[in-house]
Image (tube, rainbow over all chains, first blue to last red; front, side):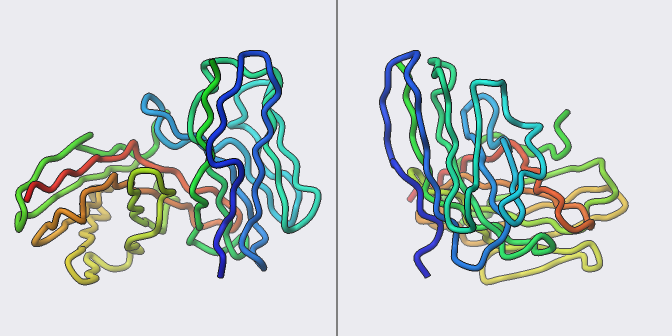
Amino acid sequence: DAGVIQSPRHEVTEMGQEVTLRCKPISGHNSLFWYRQTMMRGLELLIYFNNNVPIDDSGMPEDRFSAKMPNASFSTLKIQPSEPRDSAVYFCASRPDSSGNTIYFGEGSWLTVV
Amino acid sequence: QQQVKQSPQSLIVQKGGISIINCAYENTAFDYFPWYQQFPGKGPALLIAIRPDVSEKKEGRFTISFNKSAKQFSLHIMDSQPGDSATYFCAALPKAAGNKLTFGGGTRVLVKP
């Protein structure tokens, strides 16, 4: 099993630019999560999909952030326009089903906005 | 509102010592309590988990102790090794299907050789 695959692993971009982070969940998993990790705020859940449908996006910080899951094997998190305070590690995670307990994290996308 | 409070924020222990991390929660709907381990540059990975119907669970050198009445649970790392140096997160999940995991703030553990 390849695990949750995220890209890019590292991104440095200038303020105001659009950033797109990508995620391929584990095959067969039907729940997908996007988390943001910072020193100040720890691990924050941004959005949660089940069967490709957004279930809870209450953690999305503001309208500059958007996420899509066009099919069961792909999701994107987009920031437009990006700001320095968006600098963080963004994790994608997946879970086998909505009643399952264990979630599996990818290795993260390290974003720096300068 | 932080639903799962974790302490300490950081911990230094000598090789062979015991690392203890504590978590407390308020929501009585939580019924699954996992611990995740995160190494630098990696994503968190499930280490061990417990349900409130048992008071203790042990896997190798890692033990979870659970106190339902106090709404507290803790992770004990026995015979700590330098390879255990990582950040540890407690978490809690409500019983209802489809609900989301709530993480504690994390504890950075450093095991000195």
